[in-house]
Amino acid sequence: MSEPKASVLPANSSPLEKALDLAFGVLLDRVMPPFPALMNPLQTPSEFLPYLAADRGVSEWDADASESEKRLTVALSWQIQRQAGTPKALSHAVESLGFTPDIRAWYQQQPIGAPYTFDVQAIIGRSWSSGDHNRLIRRINAAKSERDQATITLVHETEGQLALTQVLDAPLSDGELYLDGALPELALTARLNSTGLARHYTINDYDLRAQP
Image (cartoon, rainbow, N blue to C red; front, side):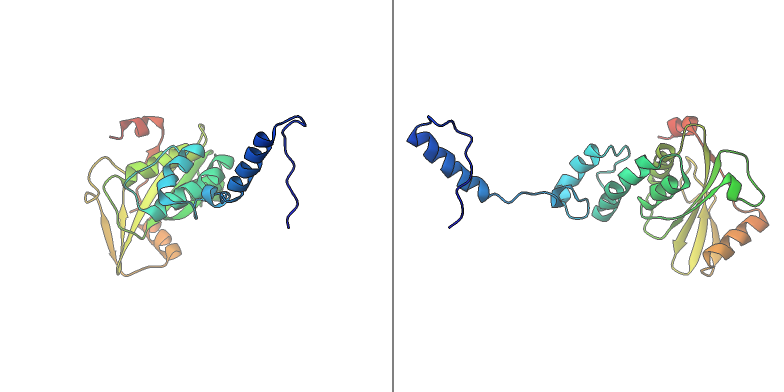
């Protein structure tokens, strides 16, 4: 028989009060606590994800996004906030949309770039919607520091093809460059940069406000 649990009732409590205290204690023992799974973005019920995102300060949220993207967004939110302004935060910002990042700070570029600039490459291996480039801009803008400027190169990966696209207000079908064959990531970067085809666009607060 289990030991009786300590009661917070005073010594002069009535038998009815003691019985109620004991009965409610038994009922509470039957309740399975939802923690820690409830606060785990990979285990929490899907309907709880928006509340968990709000609790973790997620600034860019799409209610129509896939469940896997929502879970990834919430899971990476704290890392982005803790490491804001660093290449790691920018990398997580790209990853949170399900893209493959390649982040190069100004001192990692050849030749060395302007101080406090980042070159952000996002390789897109999933289906793409017309509003995704705006969402990527917002997430990068939230992850970088105020003094930094980020340039974005989008590489859309399809079956047997890689397409370089640009972050613009125009539809994504405009200005796309299709390359035959699936080139390795490093070879693709060298090929595009050497031929002058990779066009970069500065992302700053003015550009963000200009987005629809």
